[in-house]
Amino acid sequence: MIRSVQTIENDLAALENILQRLAQDLYSTYQDYLTELGQSARRQFILASYHLCTQGFPEAFLRLSFQERQNLQGDIRALGQEVQQRLTDLIKRPFPSGLGSNADSSGTATVHDAEPLPPLAPLEPELLDLGVNQPSNGIAETGIAETAIAPEAPTHPMTQPLTPRTLAHWQDSIEDAIVETLQDISHAANRCFQDADILSDVLPDALIEIASKADMIAESSGPAPNLLKLRLETESKSADGEMPSAQITVIHMRLSEIEFANPELMPGRTKIRDLSTRLTQLHHEYRRKHHEKAIAEAESAWRSSWVED
Image (cartoon, rainbow, N blue to C red; front, side, top):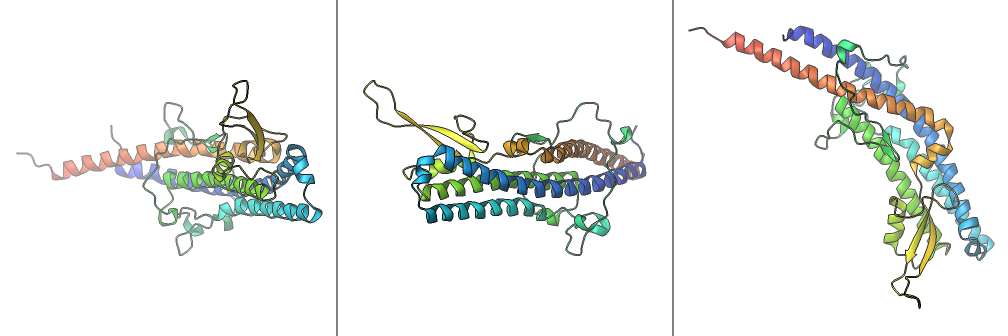
């Protein structure tokens, strides 16, 4: 039996309250996580650069003059500061509006100015009777996994009200930007080492870019985390008919290795995973309630216009 429209609207209002609390908790969790991630990425990037120069290509590094070494180290420090700043600034991305008094006149939610809410309680059974385990909006090795919330047509989140879908889009944009930032800094670092004659200048730029952005078929690491060892084969064959090969190590910053090396990041990632699961569950319940409301309104409209012969 379909319940009354008013009863369903009361349920939707309760879901809205849960969503607002979840959104604020997700925002504050990402704020702390990105701050720690930026600091950790800077430290581990510098450490990976140190291992690349001293263990991967010590002879090439020793061929540099004192001034050239200082210039290279200055570039490395600058890239480390850049990756920290970019990761920390990701929290400034437009947040879906609709957090009541926390939304300013432009429609952008400023949840960072709001009072912290207590931890979220589990969703009540009457508001979350799904019957099956829903797929989570959780994490994969390099970020957020494929979510059960289907993507909408691209729309700037600032122009949208706060819904489970717009909040999921915001979270996905953060995770995608984390991976993109690490890829960009890896590529920039490898070009820097190539310009300094640490890496071979005969390597095509396309290969440097691919090595920076993809887990190629290669050994998972070099002398240290966030290094990738590649095996390159030449087109010419040796006297015994085999294809000669050479190994080269490049910078390849990975979110999974950064998190693994810093225990301070794991509580934040665990909480993000938990909030992602709740968001996916809330999305399904949100859609179910709206569908139930549409049915109730359609039945009411039918009865209001039906005339007996």
